[in-house]
Amino acid sequence: MSERNLNFDEVVDRRETDSLKWDFALRRGKPEDVLPLWVADMDFKTSSYVQDAIEERTRHGIFGYTETREDYFEALADWMKTRHDLEIKPEWILKTPGVVFALAAAVKAYTKEGDHVLIQQPVYYPLTEVVRDNGRIVVSSDLVLENGHYVIDFDDFERKLREYNVKLFMLCSPHNPVGRVWTREELERIADLCIRYGVVVVSDEIHEDFIYPGHKHVPLLSVNERIREYCVTCTSPSKTFNFAGLQIANILIPNQSLRRQFRKQIQAAGYSQLNTFGVVACKAAYEHGAEWHEAVCRYIYENLKFLRSFVKDHLPGVELIEPEGTYLVWLDFRGLGLCDGELEDLIVHKAKLWLDDGAIFGKTGSGFQRINLATNRATLEEALLRIRRSLEENT
Image 1 (cartoon, rainbow, N blue to C red):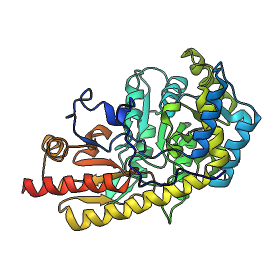
Image 2: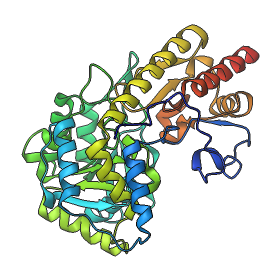
Image 3: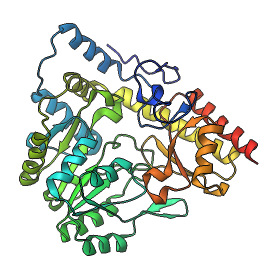
Image 4: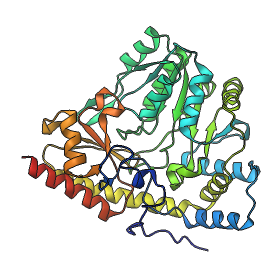
């Protein structure tokens, strides 16, 4: 058997499949005819090995309560060791229906109402939501944009930890939406500060498998032995292999006490057995999906090069924040001199595009838009041409 789903130029019609990305524009307040490049899933068929494994399981015809066996752990452990040089142990793993579910569980497990939780805006907006929705207080040590590159203000980071008596820090690594792949040195400084102030770190590493040439993802758990006593790492094959709808995430917690607290919140939420197809897909992806993963990463990198050239040559006033990882790209429209409402009108109503408005990632996202590169080249080119035409009409 060989990998079949490698034609990423294929335009797959996702409409009328109950796709959040493609079928819910009107319900989400957008014109029906917008071209969607917002939510973080891909317009590519997953690995044929995953597809075949699901089809084989479907033919069995019984979909009862499902749990994982040793072969599931072995597939996950091999992927983490091979791809990220991280050795994991079976007892570290707790499984959830997704990373956002895990983020919310962590907030409830390690803080109480009224506690302060630190994040780094602009950042994936569910991090903010799960803090506020659970009665905790968001504190942001904002990332700083210097010469087109985001950095951490470590003086501000430490000051916030200390002054707000922070109990929990939520790290996005690689960072969504600004595309940073944190260096080992940066992660060592984060780890040292969190250890010094006794802060639990929840590291959202769901984009760990999308790293551009010249950069390397470093799992926070691999930085040093001490951080393992403070760290909860959230991983999932759902972004890597494009099956978010199958709802499976692997949460790595070496510290037994942190693991016990986290498990208590999973149980309190009433969640127990896993999605049958999520288990099947995860195992198949990590066992047989390497060829597909490497090919999709190459294709997305070519999309990035196409985007980079197009922005430079055809979108005056727009700047690309060069990503180091993820298939989500942060575009700076501030050079157009538009307020947030005017920019949203330009993108949604004139260009007829559905992107993610930067303001939802925090106040420092004002004037930016997030675009999803994980689509076929023809769709990406059409989206960029729409922006170009709208800019020309707006001058």
